[in-house]
Length: 548
Image 1 (cartoon, one colour):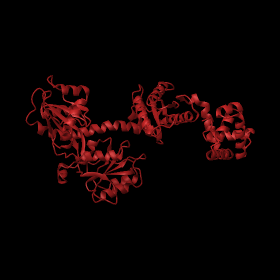
Image 2: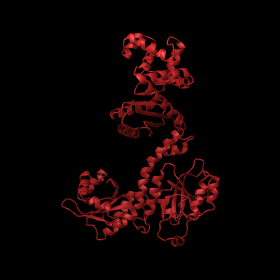
Image 3: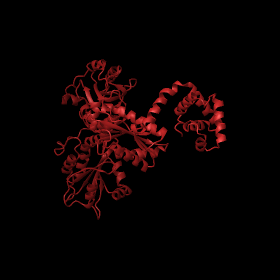
Image 4: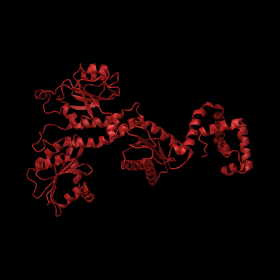
């Protein structure tokens, strides 16, 4: 069931009656982005004023009037969603945001949406609740009272080069838009007479490190981030004067604007113009930051959905990843051959993810605990996958990790990516438990995989083997006799006493004593082929065969 489109916007007079210059629901959603928050139903239009954003709590609704409320844990297909919407409406909330449900809109929610005044919004699945409420609060925090200037009125939201050009005309100087880490996001065209520092900053796409150090040590950066006003950097023997202002949304710093003389001194009204520019820049920097984060977030969500959701939304994931849903794909799974420090593994996986991003065919990394899954799209068997597997092994090895990279089977479309991932996980398990090369596919370890499947399927149905192995392990833990490993070696070496003794590192007489002792403890006869078979299954299940 689908909800009807949002109602028409309120009239300007109606908006004025509710607070005039207050931000509106439409403005907040417009800054955050309709692909982040979708308006499903707005009975009173989207020009209704909003006073803030908060978390829905049915027991505490006194502060909800005029607010956008998020409802974590509630999706649009849940039976309780209608109750949340009605409660938010009784509290006077401007809107309530639910997670978009996989099953669409519950009929009871659709009915409630037609009977209340509170708008119903849906959160995109790839953005976290904490990030969303931060964005909503930042969007609402901007006053919205400053009318756009003639120069900036036609700048599309998020068009930072266009914004820099418009603000340069407004301020009367060369403008640089920077993020909080002094990276250049955009700049206005500069005259041939631009000072060397501006040219260096533009060419390097960030303020030179020595200049950042100078500004920090002089206290200029502290003043910039702490002040709510324009700060002035006087001219010196090297560079002309600068004006700078932080761009804020509420308490959050989004970046800064820098104005420099460009062939002629800054005009007398430059300070006031730069203050106005900082207000104009807020929605643009919010939009830019969200787009930068959301692209990576949406890719991560799309890959996770293909791997973990049942059934996955293949068409949506394909659109986000920019590949065809019916393209063949393969999953690689990388991990460490032995336990390793978490910080070392984190760094190794970070470097491996960067290598994946640089791969010539579309490839996407997904961290899952102590392994890194890599979806390679548009591939058939061996089409660059083996090369990527070797590259990943080399990256991990260089980061101090003894690598294992398992190659899953090639499958016919993104909808079967989970099957390839499961295959890669089996190969990785074989490599970890049985040993083997750094990189391998299912065919490389076919017999070991089959043996592992047999063990998994049969061992739990042979309690006699489990009891025998448990007795050996318990005795070994108490007395340190190494009986489990001795019996395992005896079976692996087909009863060859000399080979077994060499492997265990004891005299053959000691070996025979240990085997007799094991037989007595467990009540088993290791000369009986049936007993040997069952004990081997138990030892395999315990991870003692292949030999540790």
